[in-house]
Structures are given as C-alpha cells and as structure tokens.
Length: 221
Image 1 (cartoon, rainbow, N blue to C red):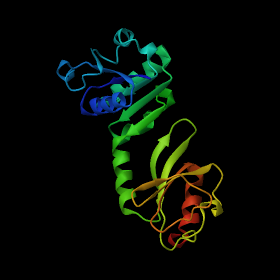
Image 2: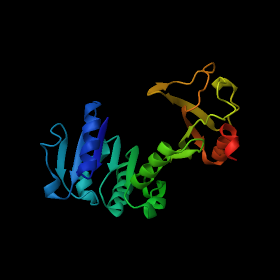
Image 3: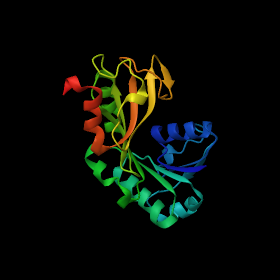
C-alpha cells in the first residue's frame, strides 16, 4: 500500500515509521524545510512541498496513493489536504488529524475526510477507559457506517459475570469484537464465560450505546 503523509513533524514521522515497519511505501510531505529530515525515517520518500497546493500534490503523484493522512498541526491545512486528495485525485482513503476539539465537526466526508483522529478526544477516552468500570466509553468513530468502537469494563455486579458471551442479548447493530483480560486479547467465543473486570470492545451504532450500557451494568442505572 502506498501512503502519503502531509506533515513531517513528530506525529507524521511516527506514523511513517510504523507503516514502513509494516511493509508499506510512505511519502512524507512538508512545506517547512526544517522538517525535512530523511535521516529520521530513512526508508521513506520525502518531498518539500505545500500539501494545500494542487501543483504540489500533482508533483507528489497523489493519484497513485491508496491512503492520504493529513497529520499537520494546522486543522485548516489538514482539511484542505483531504479535500484535494478526494476531489482532485480520487484517493480511496483519507485520514484527518484533528488538533483542536472545536474543529472536529468539520472533519467529515464533506471535507473529504473518511476517518478523523482527534488527539484530545482519544486522550480523554483513554483516561476514561482507565478509570471507569461499568460505564461505556467511546474510543473511536468510524465515519463510514456511522459506527463507533466502544469499551466497557464489566463490573462485578453485572448479571453477565460468569455467563457465556453467547447468552448476551446484544442490541441490533452491535457486535462484541474483543475481550481483554489479564493482558491477553481473546476472540469472543459463544461458550466463553465473562469475568468481572473484563474489558469488552464493541462496534456499535450510537443509537444503541445507552441500551448496551444498561444491559451490562444495570445497577448503575
């Protein structure tokens, strides 16, 4: 897979390194000459250019990319980059970094964003996930399909502690995808019994989140 990353700061370089380690071809783009440091990610391609300019993206060969990641520290630049990637180069998948939470509502398909990654929201969700038991925490929103990745740590007074996962009457448009227990990741098995403290990860539409929370931890409601 070929991936272009707009923004060669610490975030962009970290993403590039991870993708290269996973076998992908990566192009890093930045308009700041001081950010062009090929020695930091030697296996990436580098381009000194402004990702908000059409001519720069043409030079980058964006039409050959499978994914474009707008990872600069400027929300306006990220939105312009994703919009151009979608409308001018028909890039199949775009990811936009949200720097300021007030701007998150803009990062939608209307601006060419398939997936938005909000650093403030993720940090907040991780804090909630670390300290809450029995409350549903939204970790991530999938733009396509209007679904969310949500987590709930099963409280000891849940009626489903000790019960097989196959007996949980999950709402429609809700799927249990992973159970985290004692540092291990388990693929849900209908016969596998749940334990107090299990971290349950679901993909669910927003409309059923409250119902799911009440189902698994009714004492809190």
